[in-house]
Image (tube, rainbow, N blue to C red; front, side, top):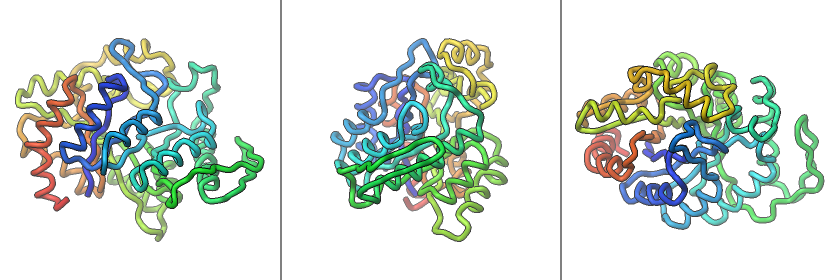
Length: 329
């Protein structure tokens, strides 16, 4: 069982965010993950630092935590060979500490660059092909690749770790979840959705994809807002209102201003529904435990508040000891 910290790249600039990542290690957390967005979800107060150089800085400032993306799309803004090179460099610098979390992407991060935004089946095929291409570059000395979307001629990643960087697939539906079980090293999803989605759809799809191979790690970003004042705990979720938009509501949005406009229309009850909002530490841990009971083994906590040091301090004193005592982690 591992517990991690989600670095809110959409909410904080790279310097401030780096200090929070360092503080997460000091608080006793096991991992720090960061998203990779070209644009934030909120125009007012939004940020979007590049994930890969930021992870290099975080790795250099820390000693033991696992660091990774949750998630990066290696299929539109990036050529997957360039991602393979950059992530291999991180793997050499920080051996056995790096995870590459990948996903099929959002229009918000691609369309603004003048890129086409294909339908879901093509995005799925692109993701699958990109993973095959990156792994080949990490395992072979000379790679020629002729796929549906990319072509390589005698390509080599000269600096790569002895053990390839694990690739985790982020999924909100069964197709990519099944692919995570079939070809991934891990599966990533997010909390705050109906229990049946995890119990009846996503996790069974991962198991179906595994089909007898060693189980992949099941990771979930757990959205939490823990504060002694229950009203404050609920109000702090407001900045992350876009999380409460459905995939259909936000998938085609390419402008942070439009995302912000739609999110602002949501009532606070719907916004807070994506989070475990608690003022009591035992009740908070009980609600987190529901995800462990479902079978998740790596919980990465995402707090929506502006004061991340306060969050980390409260979690270090009130929540992590209870979690570790309960689950032996």
